[in-house]
Length: 275
Image 1 (cartoon, helix red, strand yellow):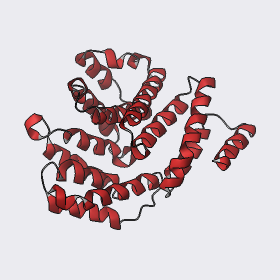
Image 2 (image 1 turned 90 degrees about the horizontal axis):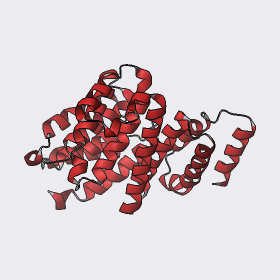
Image 3 (image 1 turned 180 degrees about the vertical axis):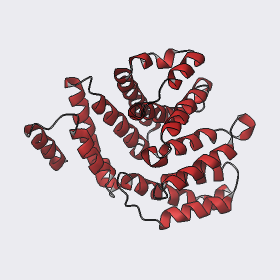
């Protein structure tokens, strides 16, 4: 933690652009293979980014970085459900702020009727809009997953899916296929009897794996989202064993892959009882 603080101070003194600092250290975090060290050290960095946002409240890159890391930390390391929800909501709010700064017509996106919302998303046709669109959609998906017992939250699935589909239409390989993983998760959130679409989810998961086989979380989500939903134990166990046997190291995905391995072991250990 002290080394992290010293690095930050040195970079500031060297007059590094404030918008570059979070990305440089952010990749250091994402490429780490030590979940414990990141868990203990990342809160310091989150506070540093919060402080930087006080000085630079309209820095789009800072807002996106803060959104991403709050979502990652809350999702991976926080066990308490209330804290996890709080950090996910913060991630969503930060992503919306970045989107609003980048695209003024999207400032009231969450308050629009579905028709107006659909028209606004349809207007997005440039790849430079992808980071903002993806940040809002991914944090919103996480928020819906945490509040899936709330009917009002589930009612937003159509909007989030529309945003993720737009990301995929612009660049299917964006963020190592993660938009496809999110679409798979969205379509497997509910059982078929309640409107879930497991076969569509399966297609999205398989497309994500094809885009980047090194993105191990895709197989974990496939096993949990589709395998368990459809009671396909053979597929479930095969996917999880493949994750455990795979190499975690991949630029920008190493930390996520280490978490995927941890989740794969947990799910595999509970396979017999579940099925």
